[in-house]
Amino acid sequence: MGRVAVVDSRGHGGAYQLAAAAAFVRALNPSTRASAFGLAQSGLYAVQGLGILAGGAIAQAIGAPLAVGLAGLVGLTAATMLAISWTRLRLQLIQAQRG
Image (tube, rainbow, N blue to C red; front, side, top):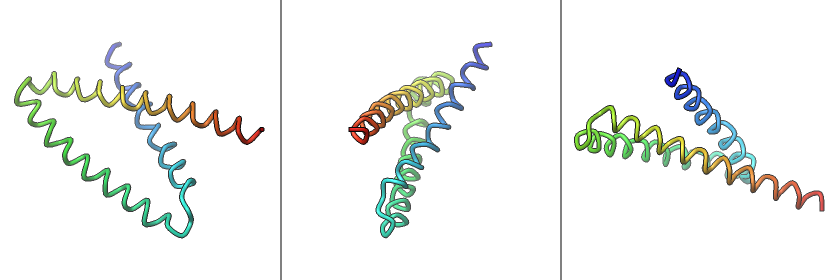
């Protein structure tokens, strides 16, 4: 049962990325949208590569199962914090538009 909850929470973290990417694209000027989105995607690929490198080093130090669990916890925490801050910002923008 615990594994189902972990997989379910991972799916929620991944689903957040879709909303974040859509909000990012909508916030961009149409004339620079392609360049900005390409730069953002390149940055994500670079960070993912560094994450793999760091994950390997951590797995060597503390063992693979613990490293994978730690990575999942860090990722879920980051996604949750971003979702909360994005929701607050969105609510502030909606309230500002209503006057």
